[in-house]
Length: 121
Image 1 (cartoon, rainbow, N blue to C red):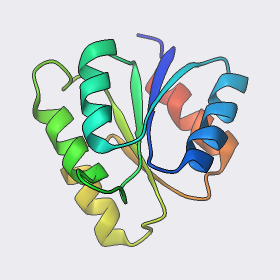
Image 2: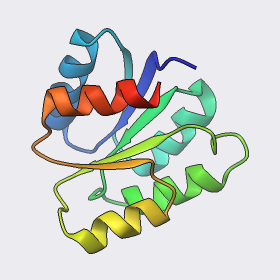
Image 3: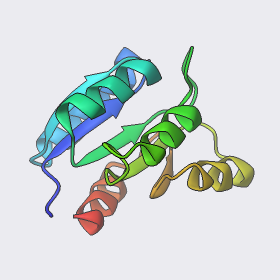
């Protein structure tokens, strides 16, 4: 199934804007959420083709949100790419263990991210 609709879950307005611009220029439809809780609700409601998930957020963090989405029958088939400043190998391993399909560190390499998304499609 080709990826068309992408949900960005990130508490930073700047990051949401940067990622949205990149994805829209790549031909994707983008929606956003400002928190893990909002992102989980929006994913269940809109069923995006892919989720870009920040980790460091107040309330439900990205690891918790990824785990919730990957274990929920309604959202378990939506691939999640964690997109975070946390660049330690242990963070990456933990993120993948929560159900993420890939792990990208910020600042994001635009062409590399677009290539990863295309590879999932």
